[in-house]
Length: 164
Image (cartoon, rainbow, N blue to C red):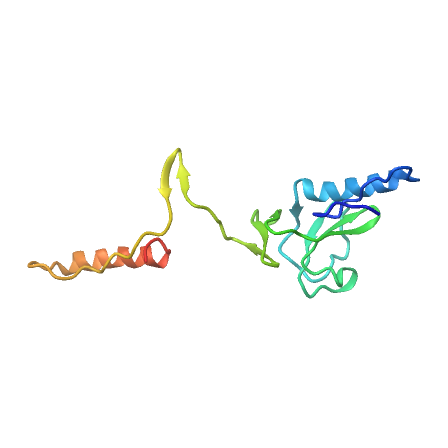
């Protein structure tokens, strides 16, 4: 059966008998990918009593009905479990935590935002990492409290990766 390269969605063939089966399978897979919402973080075993339409992320060491489907998205349908192998960059939302999981380099990752800059109300508040700033040193008048405060600010900026 012909299918799409990216998500293996079945395609109709000329003169195909029972086209509705292929068409319905394609719709099931499209429904899983249209706005992918999962019930939680990756798990190894299917739930005991899944509801039709609920989707899950599968851990690599999957068990039971999910064995051999590690890393996939599993969705429970009227016809049983359907699986989608993710492609690089695919994003899903975890309904329970509202976190976004992304498929990166062969695994699901959460809590990592990838961007070049952050703007709030059109104001750029965060850009790429800036060069290192040295700790305060020298001077003719040394204010230890001020130096300690500046050093703490610099350490915070370094800890967050904003400066070298």
